[in-house]
Image (tube, rainbow, N blue to C red):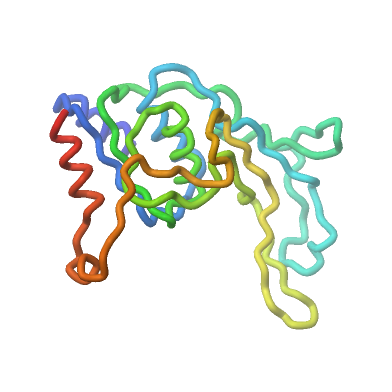
Amino acid sequence: MFFRDCFHEIDRKKSGALLLDLRDNGGGADDLGKLLLSFLIDEPFQYYEDLVLNGLSFSFQKYTAQKRGLPAEMMERQPNGKYRLVKHPNWGIQQPSKPTFSGKVYILINGNSFSTTSEFLSHAHARKRATFIGEESGGGYYGNTSGPGAVLTLPNTKLQAYVPLMTYYMAVRGYKAASHGVVPDHPVTYTIDELIQGKDKELSLALELARKH
């Protein structure tokens, strides 16, 4: 496993700092965010507070290529008539992975750090497990609407629209800027000349901070 091999190598070299460059990382498989987090903490944790769908089928499905409803065996119907996705790999109490990295963590972020990346960032921030450098991340701190979805073809205009169907609620607390992503500890801005020159001020700052440890 790539992550495990990396952290074994980090442990072998007794590294005191870890840099994670998550700029322009638009997301991906949900379980990878949880897996990365599991190497940075040393106790069981809850990743998702809830995973909610309003139903198993929807009236607009006739305008999509998705004719079947969502798999009922993965869902648990709630008293309010909505459904909870209880067969998600990130559902329930998660276990830490070994070897745990306990050193300093510096994470580079920008406005295109979305989706799974945003979920990981929320946990790393809420647990005070990293120092954040760059721009405010994309995505919501407390969750998002994404996951299973459907592409609608509107019947008259033939325009297409993607409709996400599940709401992800992150198991994090205490962030006052609820309508924001993760706001960096060290904001970084560029002049036009610096952009033309291809400077990487975030990486330079992260290396400077890491070398102090």
